[in-house]
Image (cartoon, rainbow, N blue to C red):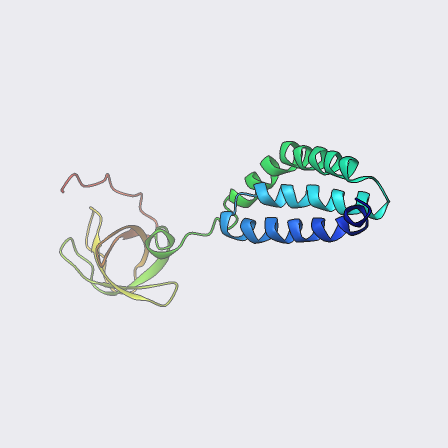
Length: 159
């Protein structure tokens, strides 16, 4: 029994490593909280507590970590950290200029991000070259645009 008490800290370190390895694959922070309980077990072993007390301290620390830390940490990890829009969503509202007259059938625009797009006007009149535009929608490879000072047209019910 003296051997176990003398080397219990090594057992705790092995247990912590095991919990951390499982956590890498699980990703739910449960095993991380158990590893924190293991840290409490190591500290109590270093302080000279008997093995039965080390287990109780580790269990209490793990349960406390699960109850108090896991939920807020998961919430923080899962919240959307970058509200910036990407791909097609990032083009909606982007300004640009007409390069070839844009009609209800087609035309070309150059967007503020430097991309050239085929475009159609979203209701209203044709837009001549050099007219400022705003992208209102993307349909396939075509930007649906309006003049920069115009209100957006009602959505077309075609599908």
